Image 1 (cartoon, rainbow, N blue to C red):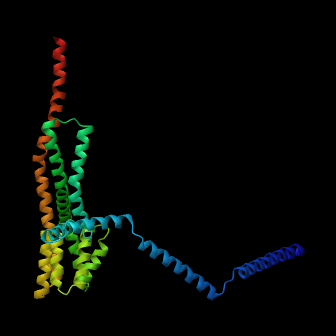
Image 2 (cartoon, rainbow, N blue to C red; image 1 turned 60 degrees about the horizontal axis):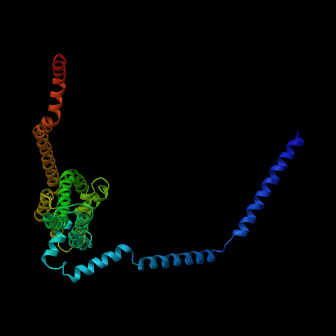
Image 3 (tube, one colour; image 1 turned 45 degrees about the vertical axis):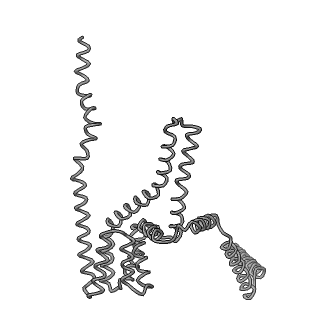
Length: 312
């Protein structure tokens, strides 16, 4: 028994020694001096930087198309004057804050009537049969629709964004109140709330984040608040801006003002929901009479009619 145990221990020692020798040989073969490792890392970083620079220097398809749109707009003087400022303001109210948004909008507004007119001309010439008296009105209507569609789209997006801001503003004011009571400044509170609301309330988070940036870098803080009211185009956000301006001007407690505004906006939202609920019976009258009432009458009168016809 002692001999068997000694044999087992001898085998274990040999296996351990073999493992140590193998590990030492691998380390000796793969050993790299520190200076060589640092040089190799430096070469890799240089190659990565050069590839990124070449990739950035090479214009993409999107950049090329935006450049062509900008050249066309500059040649036609479409981005100058009061009309261009008004277009930029409307796009910001719709949530398009990019510097290229006005270029794309102007190009689409210019190209869409031509594209819709050409499409209708192609369809009426090949697929759809239209009388000769109606061809010209149809073409003019297609051009008019293509001209009006961008305006309607921007107006629709602006209205939906305004409704979203009015709906989520009470929760944002609650978070602002907590941050202000914790001792944060107004720009830090805007930045913190924007970070917390980025996933659930993206529109309000974007407005708060841009306002925080402007409060930090603009020399006039009142201008930053006015920009937020102008971008949002919302009475609720305008009331918030007035409260913030009065707080900075007269030194009134900011947390109390935010709490009162939050309660008022929440009550307004509840009253609008109650108003919509009160309108539902009147709105359901027409579908009830058109769809449900004829079916109910048919179900009730069908047996009597069938029995009357069977008797005759």
